[in-house]
Image (cartoon, rainbow, N blue to C red; front, top):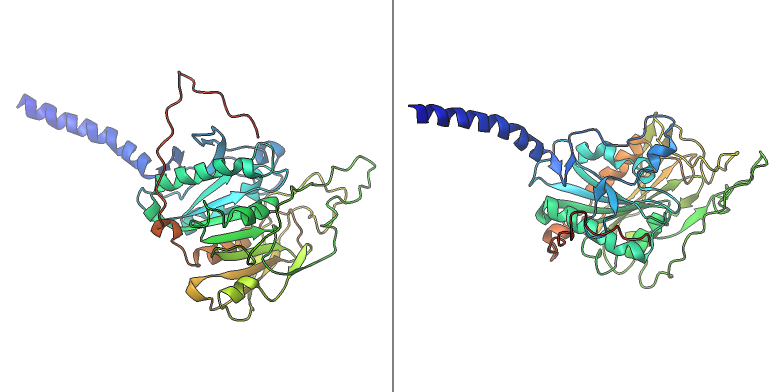
Length: 370
């Protein structure tokens, strides 16, 4: 009798202990509590430099560099997800990009796992490729390759140009289902708006020195077919004050899409979170001013073969740096997850072995910035 009572009591205590642990495991990914509000999320107005310069608090195990990882609040191991890798622009930071294109705000709606890395020198080059590969390997291994519905590669400005450089390389070509270029170069023609974007730095009225113009690293000229020699859906978006995309697209031709049509406009009463505070004296329309509400035109090339999506999204009266508003962010992600997916789930990728444990109690020193 005593044994039975003890066993029953022990089982009850074990159940009470196990229940919170199981609940936490069910909504945790790589140590991130998915059910918690996203850390370092900008407020609706006046996002401070101490917030947007945060580098992330998830560690990539091989390089010991950090990144942000956002996951659905109700995430459970074994569930299907859509992974977004989002790259910041030249001179920027991981958390600026995370709030500039706030896919984390719709992570629950579209079951997104959003990866936002950062470069220690604040722009992307080949020196960062292994770091990006390692992050993707770790996240895909954690969610399970069979559970990746879409892998989406997004980037702003120089991050968008970097997405062009890497999308068809040997590592990413069999992984990327959708590429999103945010003011980072369209596949196909676009007409410059001539409103102060190309010059980089507006005239300052206060007499103080203006910041230097961004000196984007030069990428090799694109060779081969437009967009590269691999297949992926493509969504281009920018501000009306930067350039206007043409009504034709080489990728639409490649995928046999019909002529471009205009979808209903996206209206955004709420502004985005971030802007470039260093170039507002008075700033230029092309480079971008403070965030504000607005609207966006959505152009889609319909009936593409094999489930591909080719689209242009133009934000009216916006420039290069105003943060994306919530409804247009939602519309872009909706286009992305509506495209053909499954490259990772059906491909030959296998997770690499985990990195060896670091020697000694504290591990090796961090990798120098490169």
